[in-house]
Length: 226
Length: 294
Image (cartoon, rainbow over all chains, first blue to last red; front, side, top):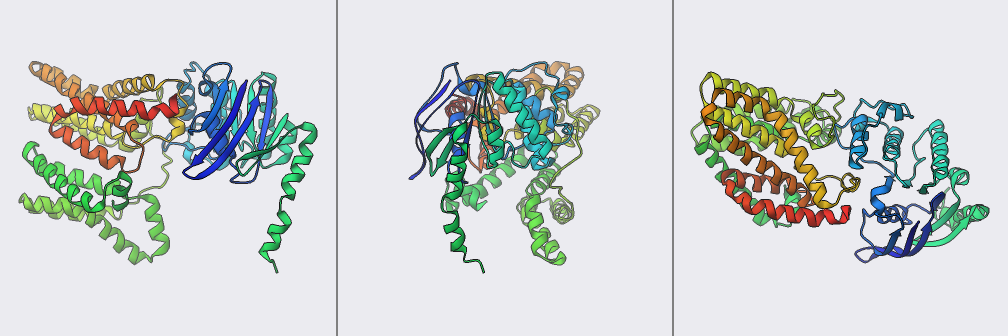
C-alpha cells in the first residue's frame, strides 16, 4: 500500500501541490484527472521521487522507486539508442536478466531503429513496454493513451486490467474520460494543486460533469468569437 | 558561450579573459609537449568547429535567410570558430597550416550535419547500453585513424606516438561523459548512489579496455621493455576517465562541457591534480545522486 500524507510541492513561491492525502492499494487502478497545469505530472514525479517534496510518502513493501515503473507524458530518448537497446537499458537498470526482448515486443515496434526517430505514439509504446518488462509492482502512467492508435489503446486497456488482476498498484492520468471509465476503480480530481474530490466508479459521471462545467462557457464567452 | 558562462555561475566579463588565457596557455603547452603538434592542432580545431555546428540552428538559418545569406553566415560562423586556432598557428610560425585550417573552416560549412542519423552503427557495447553506445556511434571514425596511428608508431619505431594513440582513445572515451543524463535515466536504477557510481565506473573501464586493447597488445608486443610505462599510462588514462564519470554526476547544469574541458585540460597538463579532483567529484556526485537514488 502507498500512502501519501500532507504532500506539498513548491517551486520558489509557487505552490503547485497543496496538502495532498491519498492512499493506493494493490489491485486498484486510480485515475488522476484535472486540467492542464493542475499538477498531475508534478504529483507523479513526487510519488516517484524524481522531484523533492514536503510531506510523507510511505510504501509498505520497501523502497518504492525500485519497484515502480514510471511512464512519462513525453518519454525522452537518448540519441543514437535503438528501441532494443533502450529496453535492455531499462531491464539492466532493474537487474533483470535473460529477457527475450523480441517476444515482449507486443506493439510490433521496429526495435532495431533509433528510438528518437519513432513517432510520438511509438515512443510511448516503447516506454510502456520497457516498464512492463521491468516487472514492477507499482505503475505510474502519465497519459498512457495520448498519441497512441486505437488498436494499441485497446491493448493498453487490457494490460491495465491484467496488472490489476496481478495485484499491482496502478496510478494513471488521462484526458480521455472513456478510457478512465473502462479501467479505473477510483478517480481523484486535481485542481490548482489540491485534490478537489475523490470518487469511486459510481460517481465518475459526476466528476466528469463537474470538470466540464467549470467555467467553460464563461471562458468561451471571453473569446468573443464572431 | 555568453549564456554558458551565466549558467556556469560566472560573469562573462570574468569568463572571457579566463577562456582566452586558458586557450593560449593550453595551446602553447600543447605545442611544447606534443610531436607533430601543428598537424594534430589542425585536426583538433576542425573537430571543434564541426562539433559546434548545431543541426537545429542550421535549420533555423535555412528557414529565415536566403540561400546566399545562409551560406555567408555558415562560412563566417566556421571561420570565427577556427580563427583563434589559426592565429595560434601563425604565432608559432606555421603559416601554411594556418591557411589550410581557414580553408577547412570554409569547407566544413558546406558539410551537411544530419539532424537524425538513421544508419545504425553496430557497437560492441550492446550488453550495457550506456554512454559508450552513444559515444561510439558519434566518434566511430576516430578509431580506425587512431589504430592507424599506432601502426605508424610501430613502422616509424616511435613509442611515444603509440602512447599518444592510447591516451587519445581514453580521451575520446572521457568525452562520452560530458553530457548530463536526464533525471529519469538515473532514477530507473535500483541502486544507491555508491552502487550506481561503482557500476558506471566498471562499465567505463570495461568498455574502454575493449577499445584500447588493440593498441595495448601492439605496444606490449613491440615495446615489451616499456610495458611498465605503457601500463602506467593506461592507469593514468583510466583515472582520467573515472574523473569524467564522477564529474558527469557531480554537477547538473548546462556549461558542464566547458567546465569539464577546463578541469580535463588542467589534469592532462598536470595529472597529479587528480588526487584532489577525483575524491572531490566523487563526493559531489554522491551528494547530487542522493535525490534521484535515495
